[in-house]
Image 1 (spheres, rainbow over the protein chains, first blue to last red):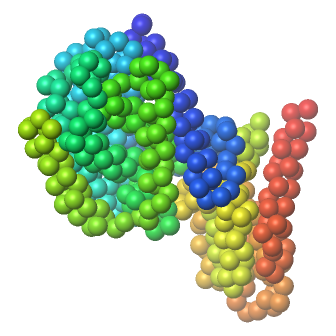
Image 2: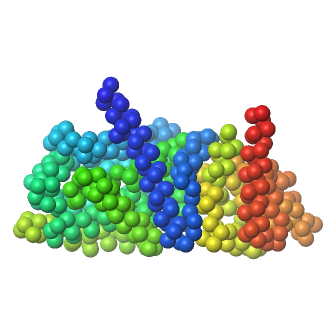
Image 3: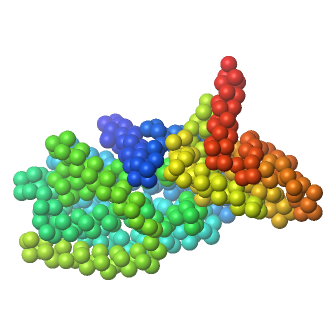
Length: 303
Length: 144
């Protein structure tokens, strides 16, 4: 019963969704201010979600209905579990099992897989093109992403999120070292691709392939997919704070760290053009790989 | 209730039915930061499945008529249709052409007309505001 409450209300689905909408509003408002305009009203993400719920859900004739409708559900459930693990760790670092970091990495990988499944089961040629792009992007950013996560593991000798927070409180944040800074930079770039934001949003490029992976989605499944995106936008900076910046306590400093990471993400999103998929793969497999391996070696030496 | 929910976040899909591109340029102008339609929750979307508003511009000719009908069928309901420009509203000087199939409202139901050749961005915002107001008033009257 307690577990069900935690999963559905706090710190699970409802909590993450509400704060995700808040964060999504901040994202859109900051974007608007950068473009020198006023931006959407405060409740706009909620209005969008509510409107999508009353729209008709169309399932294309060529689609595999089961997979098509399952994909947003799988994505949103995995994101909710990630949120649950991260928040439980923040409130009580000793409450979870050893190796929850690895579980979180796997659960974060489920969202792109679900999106790929949904897009390729829709039977739309543009969606299959977008699915192939998403797959290539996923394979290219996942390696630097995991390598940059290994740096805090090496420095703190633990694969438990709670211990990562506690050790950082006693022995200083991971980002205070050279290897920590490099790993954090690589992590920020990789989550830009993980969130599907602008320099790496070629999988849903609206101007080019018309919404890409979500092209056939409408109504409720589209609402869930969009909700999943904004929930990820809410929890991935928290993941970064746990790994590199030593947790959310005290709460006002934690909030400050959160806002700084969020604004960096939004600024990268607003000041860069969309790159091609081959450029993205080259970028991740050359520059980011070299940097993260360098960070790894520095962490082994102890810098 | 439904009308209010729908009109607070309108996602626009632009259907160009062989226009001369003047209306399209003005539509793009309306979406620029200067007029900032995101204040009203209005966004341009790429896929017809995400659309709440079909923005139809241009003369509907024999090539495009089947596509327009198909797009209207593909759009998830409830959907609004706005005819932009004199061509889409009434076909003006093309009305006797061998190639035209009538103004947009003879092919699919139209909710708002924005005349002009091309209409100014202010005129388009005015048209959308009037559309939203009439929709919400209609639903208010119904609920009374």
